[in-house]
Length: 264
Image 1 (spheres, rainbow, N blue to C red):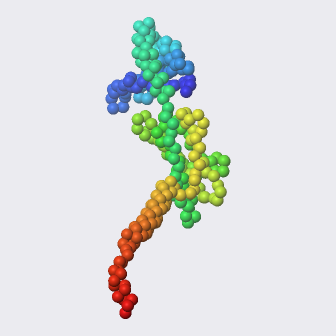
Image 2: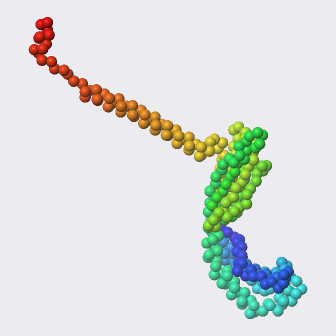
Image 3: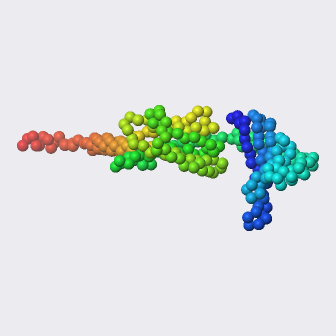
């Protein structure tokens, strides 16, 4: 991923000096990285008093600039070689020495896991609602749109805030209220820095996956039961036949008895 502009705010210097219940002083230091290898670095310090921007130091110019009559007079006395050397030292330890770490963080991306489901069925004249969810993505910037028969939909579309999902990852949802029509095609389009091209998720109005799984499991159970019954019947017939053959016998009668019976 090629990043040409990235702004990293260093809040280590976001100190506030409170002079009274209403007066306070605040400063903020920033490192601005530019270029494909972050070779161009600008270090700035911004000073405010009661939320009014007063002074700024810019390493590119190498001096302080005042924005009020008082701060302009202060800047004249502050711009000296010693002050410049101090700011250059701060730029080194805060910006230059952390450039590789910032580059590593920026180049890290995580592709979103995308799921779509129905959260409300159409009934009684009320529209149905679909939700398209994106989980576990980084960085935070993401774009979600809806297509209906290949045309972008804007009416009935709403979005949730992009929320932290843990471990530097984020999640968000987009909702679509619509009146179902036969043969239509509804698509959720997700665009993110980690994806080489937009991800398309097409809504399948058939049974949800969980319901389909229940039906499949039920059919498999019924089939196994049927097989068990057939196997039991076959086994019973086989064992019954064996028992009949095993018990088959002949009765032997003495010849003398047959002759005696024949004589009578």
